Length: 383
Image 1 (cartoon, rainbow, N blue to C red):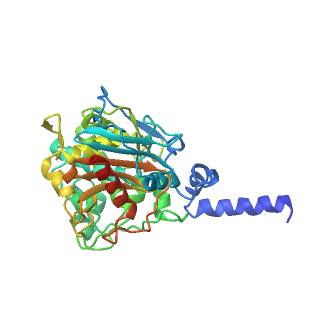
Image 2 (image 1 turned 90 degrees about the vertical axis):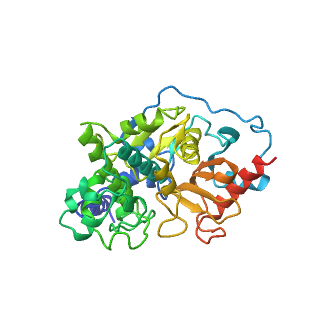
Image 3 (image 1 turned 45 degrees about the vertical axis):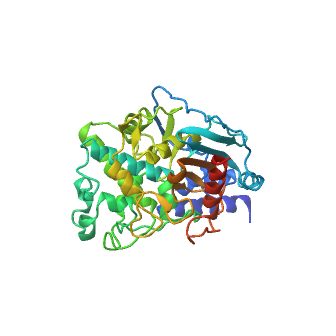
């Protein structure tokens, strides 16, 4: 095949991809595949449009007297290194007990939350309810999404059902196929349009189906509720006012967008430090209270931490409440975790590039590595 023939074939292929509606694949190629990654990675903020989640006056974490006194167990350290971790942090009673950072990352490094952002989105919706921007956590979606007024199932679906992954919104969750709806959501330039074009495939409330589309749809609902109260108010600015500043976060965070001037990618992409992710866990561990006053509604926090249609998931929180040390956790692609162990008053954060999600723990559903991290943190806290 001559060079010109090859160029013509490639051009035809490119045109066919564009014409088929899969033009987002070019963004995927430049941001991920041509950089040697098989899927999205924790350092891809620069490949997307952004908004800042501004902090106010940073409040340093107190340090426990035992801070970094004891090393990690050798097997756990080797596991963290093997899976190219960025950070492993443990806090007890609101003070830092242990921190390990893995080069080139340090305490100031901001990495992608991936689906930890789903929990943040539910927290933010709860704040909007408390602020009178949303009528209630069980508000119907059509309160802000009239696109579903003529859809019988869509009319019955609620905000809470999106949060609990049981709204019945039509979606297929797949991270490794280049041409699929989840890849389009990550790399495409119209997140709102994409999720709003998806109808409802089952009766709301009838079945659990984990779905990034559900949380992005929740983000569209939230964006409209914010703008109705204050035109121009973005999700990132509301998050700054409602959580980042009150919690005294150490650094500004980054929210990536679907395009310049577009919507925050609420299903995936808050870039923050391990210490700042830990403050979100600490807030939930404290039943939504911060500095002696309620920041999140306690009833919402309790609802988030209570199993819904299945025993391992509540509202944007995973859990195993039957383990020796019962825990709940936020979970993101590639092993981003914010874990709370109430009985030991512990918050655990692990961030990194890879994880083992296929080896399951005692409940048969939760990744075994989560139990490893819980057991390691409990051991540190008891030394």
